[in-house]
Image (cartoon, rainbow, N blue to C red; front, side, top):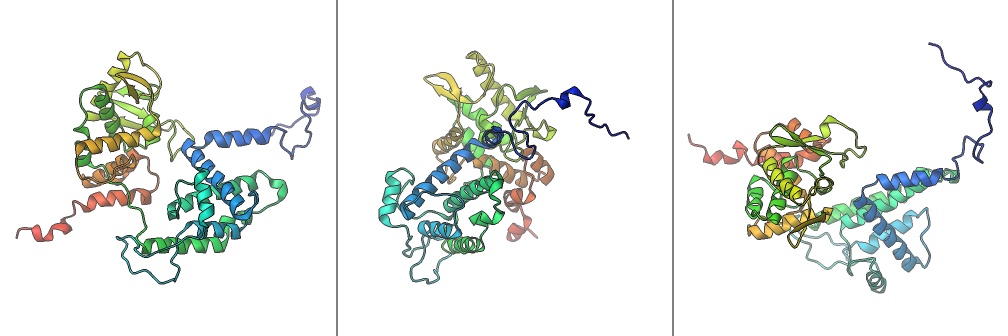
Length: 391
């Protein structure tokens, strides 16, 4: 195979560079800003908002605690102080006598001085006075870790290694591990919202009437559930442009999902919408056409009998919870994730294969799926009804 060579006789290659930089080992002046822009635009808005809030809190806490602005790299000592400032601990170090199903009854305390805690709340950096949960701590630490990784990557001239990220420090990791075990012993682990199985979905849908609000909510609930348990961001992203008719139903193409941020035109990203879900979607789209809405997001707000702007992510959770209250059923806590976990649980109950369930949901990890899937399978286990068997 002939390998083409770059001949110095080509006039273009002999021309002077059009930019001031002549060093191929260095980026052009505005290249770093362009790289940062790609990272920001490609990140989930919810994640970006959460991390921004977390980093603002880090700055406020550091200024109050140490009297100085926070600068990279943050030392492991500062991170350890942050953890013990915001997690409650047992002062006399006695092991608690509780079960994982009861809240820890004994008094605990945090190290953050009350005066600083009040200032953070007054400055709206913190919602309320008192210690945080381990989950909140981990979110704040994840934001700091990402900030360090980004800083280290884009400031190569500092010659910092990964060890400059304080979250990689052995003492920090050991403390976090001990904090998680302590939280579990106290019964502090959070219980996941109820899975919206077929029974739960039936109760929610029974509250949806034939008015505009009822048609929208019925279409939204069935769309989110029956297309594989879509996430709330995927539900509000459904639009005329990424839904097409297919025989007696529809096909929804996920332009970008949590497990596929690249937005590739992959056949696996096409999810069928059939049966009752297709009928409900058809009825809602007919209402949209009546308001001359023929493009853009499908699920929208309804104000004074008119269909207006698109829904935001948080509206999906509120719709589910409002319908749950209207059903007056003791299902427990429901959330937007209930649609996803409910779909997987119901698939397990009805004996749908694991592969087919993964294809519908888009899960890539079997481990992530199995907790819900096995929960559904266990509910139909013959071993659970040995005393009910007739000889």
